[in-house]
Amino acid sequence: METKTKKLYLFGGLLFVLGITIGWLISPSAPETVDTEHNHNVESLADQLWTCSMHPQIKLNEPGDCPICGMDLIPVATAKTSESTNPMVHEMTPEAIALANVQTSIVGGMNNSGELLLTGKIQADERQNTSVTAKFPGRIEKLFVSFTGEKVKAGQRLAAVYSPELVTAQKELLEAAKTRQVFPELYQAAREKLRLWKLSETQISTIENSGTPKTEFDVLAEHSGVVTQRNIAVGDYVNTGTVLFNIVDLDKIWVMLDAYESDLSMVAVGNPISFTASGIPGQTYQAKVTYIDPILNPNTRAVSLRAEMNNPGGKLLPEMFVSAKVKTNTKSQNAGIAIPRTALLWSGKRSIVYVKVPNSEYPAFEMREITIGSKMGDMYAVESGLEIGEEIVTNGVFAIDAASQLAGGYSMMNRPETKTLEVSTAFQSQLTQLTEEYFKVKNSLVNDDAAATQKAAASLKSSLSKVDMNLVKGTAHDRWMSIRTEVEKAAEMITKETDIAKQRIHFAPLSQAFLDLTETFGLTKDKVYKEFCPMAFDNKGAYWLSESEQIRNPYYGKAMLTCGEVTTTYLKGQPVMDFAGTMSATNSAAHKH
Image 1 (spheres, one colour):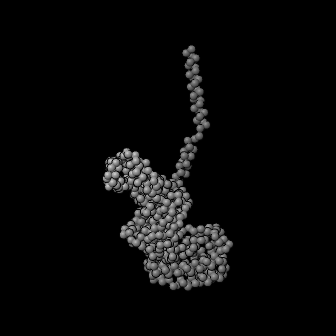
Image 2 (cartoon, helix red, strand yellow):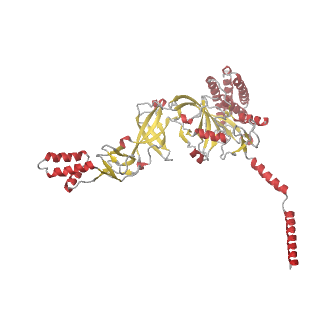
Image 3 (spheres, rainbow, N blue to C red):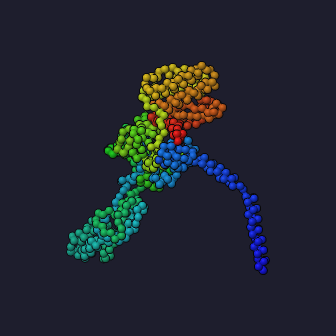
């Protein structure tokens, strides 16, 4: 028996060793596993950005030490989820926006149609606001309206009041009624006392006929509407004249808009208004200005405009924000732009705002440098950098800026270098006139007119000599001379060509020179556009400068008139950022490391 057991143990051991040997032979080699893991890690690291917690402007594609302070780099978010290529745009999740309490508003002013863009709120019509007061002293026994916001109708019971004084007055009436034939004056005085406490003749007669004092009296609603305030609770003692409820009728409402001093000359009673409310998307309402406040608010330097309108269905609620267009009698752009102080991040005369990117898949905000002017209460005038109708962040701007910085993006403390140089307005005006000549060349190519293109190029070359180079000094002078040479060379080549295809070849460097001119010195034109055709020159692509947002392709003309897209919008006074220069500086620092 013992010998049989030993044999079984020996046989089991042999099977165990044999199993280990077979497993070793068929298992994959360790070096291949390491290589697989290594390749996986390399592939994931290729999409990862690394930055320094103390110097977020440092952005590298691999881990290591900060080239400035030597701290270990930390990973940051990967590339943006949207298709936006603007490095000044920062995306946030809806949850982060809610947590930061981000609020936005539309920039007001006048558009090209002579419409003044204003913001404001819905308010209840003050004439429809009534207070329900206690007509006699007493204790609140019952409440039939126990919360604000409840709708009531005229004559509806609101509360029941027990009044010892009223009970005593009723007893006096009943005693006086017994002797009214002998003392009619005493009887009439008792009835008059009840009338003064707002009891009706019917109520008084009912008390007299019943012969029993009534202990509770109802408080009735004198008008229909919504209870906006309840000042009492069961058991409270009230005196005569105490306000028990406030009721407002919302069948009619006021639209209150803020107009600044510079807007007043363009508005008048009777001007049509169209407005939208934030809480009712897709619905536009019409009204007219019915009142202009004669007193200027000294804090905001604004005047209130009022429009009155019916409110069918009660959809428009008090305190709703509205964006309105007031139709004026002028087409000028005299109205200034003003934004609230809370929208600004200060950094000298040029400050930062965050502009909401329209029609983006995710909530996104563009960091924008603007030039501010004088302070008007809690508002600042904007000299350049913003357009009427744009939507800016008015609350939570610092939270967005901090989030962008922590994500390794641009922020107020980490802005790219400015490509635009400071030059005089006189020089900008001369460049703007020269650019108008360039637009003539561009439009001649759009129309497939080679002769007109030749003529326009010759006029451009002639206008080039009229630009006073003495208006710029130093670096600006050197940049202008370089750009001037490129303009002159390209314009000369176009004037020598009669073949429109060859003219278009020379138009590409001419356009590049004018794009450099616009970005380096700026124009006095309100807005111009950088546009791109990806199919030009055998799909190599080419840019041009346009005075219109509508695509009119100069490289193909009528053959493919609308081929292209707007890549950049240049606003008057807004500096152009040098992202290439910023990247070069970062790469240089990394190289030193």
